[in-house]
Image 1 (spheres, rainbow, N blue to C red):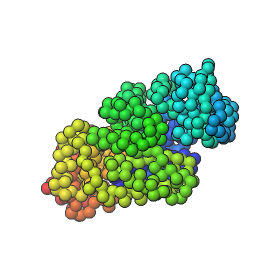
Image 2: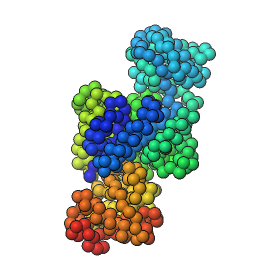
Image 3: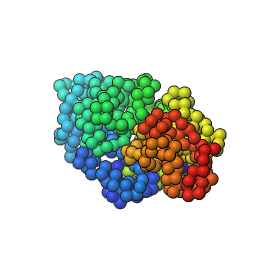
Image 4: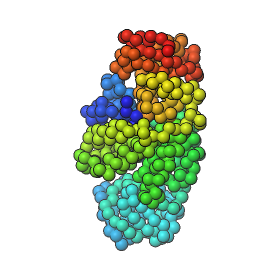
Amino acid sequence: MRRTRIVATIGPASCDEDSLRTMIKAGLDVARLNYSHGTDEWRAEVAGRIRKIGEECDIHVGILADLPGPKLRLGYFDGEQILEAGAQLTLQCGYAEGVATSTTLPVEYLGLAEELQPGDPVLLSDGLIQLEVKSSQGNEVICEVIEGGPISQRKGINVPGTVVKLPAVGPRDEEALRHALSLGVEFIAVSYVRTAEDIQPVRRILDEAESEAWIISKIEHPMALESLDEIINSSDAVMVARGDLGVEIPPEEVPMAQERIVKSARSRGLPVIVATQMLESMVINPRPTRAEVADVANAIRHGATGVMLSGETATGQHPVEALQTMLRITRRAEIEWAELMVPTDAKLLLTRAVAHAGVTLAGIAEADRILVATQHGNAARLVSAHSTSIPITAVTNSPSVARRVMLLPGVDAILCKEEDRGSTTMRNAIRIVFENNRLEVGNRVVAISGSPKAMSDPTSTARLYRVGEDGVVVGDE
């Protein structure tokens, strides 16, 4: 059972049906749709394609909608410009579209001209290009190019040390969120979370829409590190977004920040995804560098429950190969997982006593699998938080929940009708898992469920079963 989850960004290089089908069959767990690029029509088409392939292949694949957030970006313009070191560059603020030259670039956010001061650094394109502010007048910021290079439209802008007054969830984010909810996505990634309060507008809209989508807080701003505990306590999962984090803080600080975020999330039983530049060289090359392989493996060894591909699968030349490479790395890294992982203390903070009891029972009885009935996915999350090496199967009657739990480490899912008695539901579930060749005659199974109904009533029961002929449960042990 593969524990580490693979999240892959879907873009022009991977949105066709053949590529998606190959990636889903290979082991794609969650497909990411980036709302900073593309159109709503394109995203709706791709989401429909993912659902169709998943149903045809009988594979549960979650969809993650990544909101734009208060990300500063250049405006739209034609072509590519080359910025020369030592040259003067004018940033024209408040232009979503404009004409770009080697000395003038449009910037989407008007307020940037007021918030920057002489001497402030401005970084473009993930920090590859460095500017220094000399002066500002009206809506123009005059800069000197310190480190030059090629630049194209919609590249990101970072201003380390400057607090941008853009709201975490603005009108554009609310529009993107409502569109994502219309697609029935399982996960919402909130960009540039700085405090726990930044998450509340998304939670409010989810409640209004009666959506059970999980909120993934992206940690990519220094202020988030100062409020990390509060952010994690308000989230359903977190993402270490190393691209912007590595520009906002010194790059040598990123490994320590990553390890801290991973440990904090795991200690509370939350899934945590490490993202950005994991196999960056595979945007062009068919094979990764050895340093990239080590980076992915170390993220898993430190406790990450998921790893994400961005440009590698969205716009790269080898999207399928990048996913297959990531899968091979995760499988190899997990061979030594039992020795390297530190058990989470989530049982003391989040899990119910029955989840703890069920996992403990499974360990003592040397069970071959844990089945956990879940209505919303939370019971499965609380069980998976215990870092057990025993495979976990979520039992649900909701296709959306079956896709949602694909973000959880070591968890797969089956769809099963809920009967009037929880024990009947779980016995039927064991038979389904047996028929899917995930159990054998004589295997021991711990079934965690509600009572009297397995899914819709509170989790309260843990039973030990033995699998008999044809998957029929022999009885409680």
